Amino acid sequence: MITCSRFQDFDVYSEYTEKQFRYIHITQPDFYGKLCEYLLSPEIINAHTTFNIDVETELSIENYREIYDRLIQFIDFEKVINVNDLLDPSLKAILDAELINFSTDLRKDKWGRVGEYIFNIILDTYFNLDCVIRKFALNTSPNMPVYGIDTVHCSLENKCLFFGESKFVSNLSNGVELINKSLEKYEAQISKEYFNITNTNFRRNPKFLDEFQKYLNLCYTFSEFIDELKIETIGIPIFIAHAGNYNTTDIFNELRKIKKKTLFGLKTEYIVISFPVINKENFRKAFVTEANHQLEEIKKCQKR
Image (tube, rainbow, N blue to C red; front, side, top):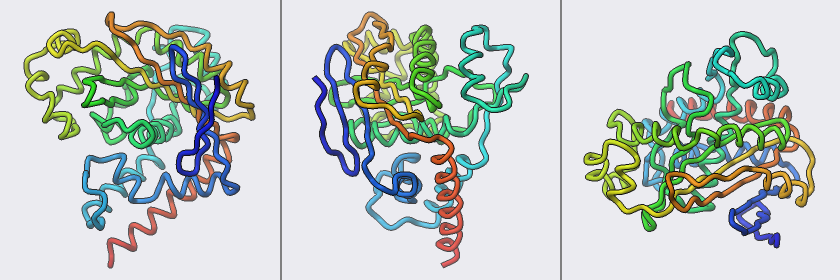
């Protein structure tokens, strides 16, 4: 049964079966402007792209500098992917539909990163999970694989890690197909991601390290980590930000096509989230406008 509840400015439609489905509907009349104003406020960026825990205090010059750097990543960052690495012709067809000017050097545009950022906010606030690594804040290689893990969160209380996958696409069916393609090799991707979690060069959540640092030192693989902590459940949050007009029934029917797999022999909890932006181009324009506005405001704050 599909139920509806209110969370901040959002109507959240939920269905609980063997998976959890969420469809987030925004009723705010000035949808794009208000959404981007919220996403790009210095306080939200500080809270969800850094581990500056005390977000109640006034932001310092250092905070503003870091926030400015995050905003620049939204505006200027592009990842270059060699098309020859994409072996599946069906995947190329989807990417052709999603990306403009498909060529030998395929640019995964910055909107995938924007989707990851929104995904992080939802996991942090709505699901009350603790982020382990702020993936958005990493200076990753231009040759980073297409199917990397997009978010790593945890429930400290339940000793459960959540490895999230995010897509920002022109229509929901493309997003579902791309998610299914990612899930085919997701266990191997999680095993690789464990080395990022243990990497001392990455900025990791201090609360997570307080709880698990000794196990990270002892365990050289994710399988060893599972055994040492006697972990029973792993979480797979899935986030699809998509354009297009859909009713609630259509969205849930499409999300049910996601092919869930049991990973590492553990109980595997899937959380599937739809975030419809209706018109991707209108959202893009509003986002860039607000990002540039915030960059100018930060410059003013730094000069005071």
